[in-house]
Length: 216
Length: 216
Image 1 (cartoon, one colour):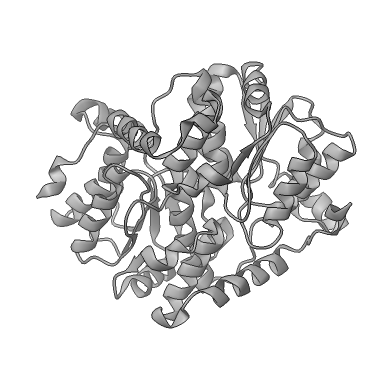
Image 2 (image 1 turned 30 degrees about the vertical axis):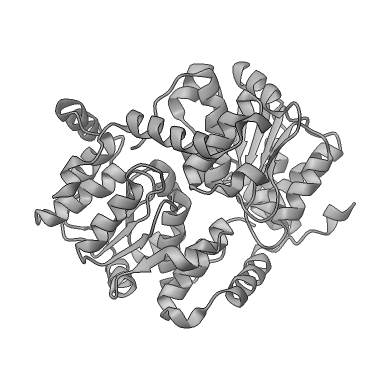
């Protein structure tokens, strides 16, 4: 049977995959750090649209790496995104990954004020000055709320990964963020998602901590 | 500022999103259950390719729903996928969601036999007869191993969601599974991923348990 011969070495699989991706994209358009992000997103989605729709503010990768090196808190909008970030890399850098969406305080705020839990979670997250990276792959309302908090001067992120997916509000939420000129990585249009948010953060982590793939 | 007017009602966002998706796909090609899956995958990826590349064995949805109703165990290949399945729906049905990839026994098996942890995790998972649904979005080696275990008669899943993403082995792993004629949902080609696996399982859960979206 042919499947007894499958490749069992995840590092070899990943290396070969990145070679294939690299051969199909125009690397000259990106800095080294940006290229690592673009490649990892395409690796996680097999969707070459991301070469076109990923957008970086000029200082995004640099500011994100500096915050990671300083051991910042990284806030996600979903438990699923939180679970996808590489644990060993986080530990090596002394970073924490936080998601406030199930926090009883967020649940109470959402109920009292008639806002989504994702929005309440952003309010809570912005109160801890160690939280310098925000990665939002699912909830446009979380990204709109974060943009509001930035505009009001209540939070000053080192990097916002703003890539919610969707047909209603997602594209607008990303454009709103990008216009604020905070360091940010977004996707233009409808595409994005938790996998995209996670692979962007992991690409930055792997630039600092050599780490094998976590699957195969 | 325009973003104070954003929609804050996740249910309204989801309803509108599904209307947009529904208007763009050819619903007649699918059964009601399949259509719910296709729509939720497109909702989670904003990628209409999934209308073409999602492939259902004739009994996949029916067998999957029956297993969920019976309170089966659902095995994922990653912690991230595990975290993405709707908890309240699982609890309502008495289902459990399991991931063996960090299990000390899986780690030991992988080290001793020189296989991936994803493969060792499938061996462990197949020992519990309550584990009737397998959802694999990341690791082709996990899906190849599962196909091997099925072929050897060591496990008889009610449903395999086999959608690993990738450039090396992913497509082959899915074709190998599909040829075994077990109830399965796959994606043809390179695309897929954890988000896709999660949204397929959640679509089946939501067919049985009315559940609002978990974000917005």
